Image (tube, rainbow, N blue to C red; front, side):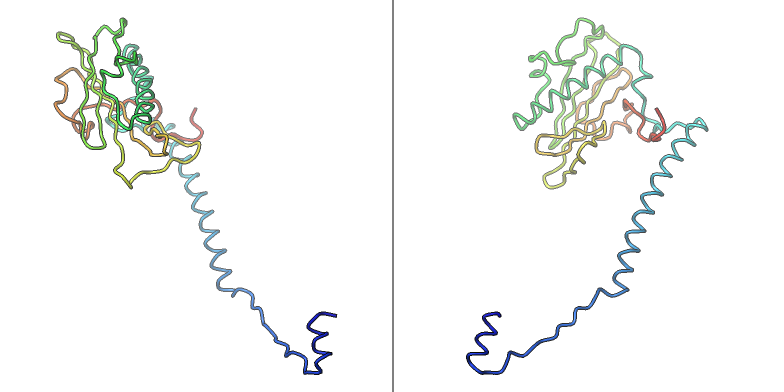
Length: 228
């Protein structure tokens, strides 16, 4: 017998009043709403995947390019330009590491002094590219221009950081070729460009595509899940 029961027997008082609590199940309307929302979400996911696969397959079968007019693929570049892009990809990785360590993007001279391509002298570089920088708040351009008297291609590495509080956050294991993740998780937009010989830009290139630059991509921007 419980302590409450013993206390009632000894005191001779009335037993405590019993309370009845009615527990109601969630309404049919609420349950139906949640089921409907879950089903709609699943349907949207299925539609997106099917459309993504169908678009890529149809475009490939019809011979339609999924590249934008100002884009070109790495595999379509001449051998010399492919070598420069490989060097730019390596240089960006090193620049990101410097940015994490020092809080600022390194200068081309600092990268060259550390022997980092493509900023450091390369005996195989017939154009003898000279690298310089253009800076603005949260942005830096690395520009590679041929030495005087050469008609080699101009190259551009465009780095764009988000303003404070406006950063995207990377999905674990998913990072496309136009983004680099800093140590704190901030996503930095990095693109690679080339342009026919001409005067190097005097200031940061806000929109390279509108100024005759061609973006170099490793993969197509819109690619079917079935495409190799």
